[in-house]
Length: 165
Image 1: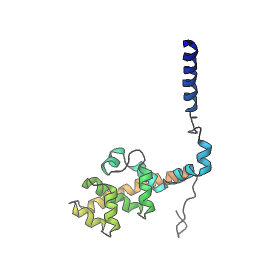
Image 2: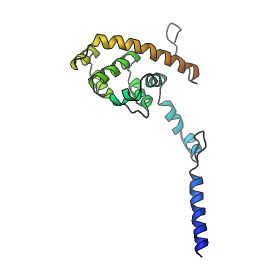
Image 3: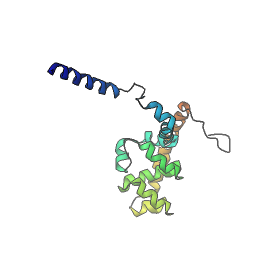
Image 4: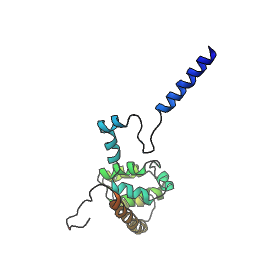
């Protein structure tokens, strides 16, 4: 009786572990249910190329200092992009947040209220002109990462009025 009970226990354990198995491509047992409900498409669409390029341009220490999740900085930055913040503005806010020890989202609320980035930086005794110069240098890095992302992304590159992206 003990042997039968023990063998059924091990069979139960084996069946539970097999039910949790996921393929290397990340397709679990509920893969088809998620795809048909649109959950997978929403997850992938939350990171914009600009947010991804920004997240790749700074290290995890920077993201931790400015209060952005180090696990998914692109997703959190995409929220700011969706709110209308542009590339150089985001870079300047990242540098101000890092220098001031404030969160990026706190600075974004100040910016939403109409404060200039210069005024925000000076309120923390930061020299805005030096931050601006650094942001222009960082902008070149982000632009090169963004260009690389457009080469590998399946998304269509946006066109600008001059015909160049």
